[in-house]
Image 1 (tube, rainbow, N blue to C red):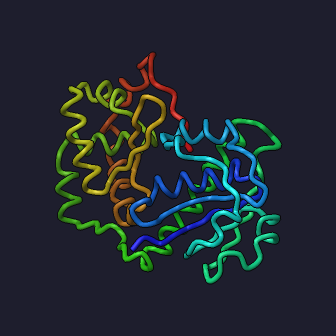
Image 2: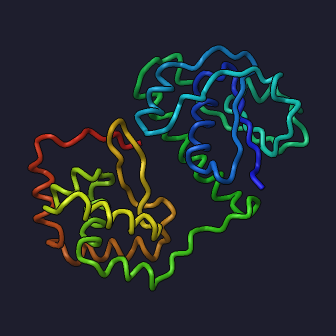
Length: 254
């Protein structure tokens, strides 16, 4: 059964809306998510912009009045500012009340501030989903060594992982150029690596970017680090091709 999470802040225009969209994108199979405000206004354009740049759907987002949702049954009510925490009191009992105090990015009206808020929310939500996996009946990914080393045993897949490890995020276009390989072949190997749990994806505009899965176990991270440190020339040629590209898409590292 999905656990129900309600995010609350004052205006329901930025922080709580971003948290709603993020958690739905990260773990919508485990959590039913909504957000509301004690004094709702409307979604801030820059909050919607940074979400869309991160490949997160915003079409269903709208500001809502807390009073319209507080009669529903919630498992967690998470406030995102001190004002909302003080005003909520015992709202939505017997839900577990959690207080997160994130600075409001709206007064700055700067893209960088909204992007930083999104990044910090994503990190906090990653911890939240990890802590509450047991309650939702979900188990951490099972990184079976046999499956992992089978994936690493292919030369192209290993090169893909090493490039992504070094560059943080890469799209298919960058990888096909760096590897001097066809798009269908690279995409097939990327799908295999994602299925194994080694990679995750996010959309930014027209591009889908691949990055190392944030739940990789420490032993696997050490394997990748040792491989890179002990074989410095492993993807040297591929990295040179990547750096020689004059039309690389611009990626935002959220």
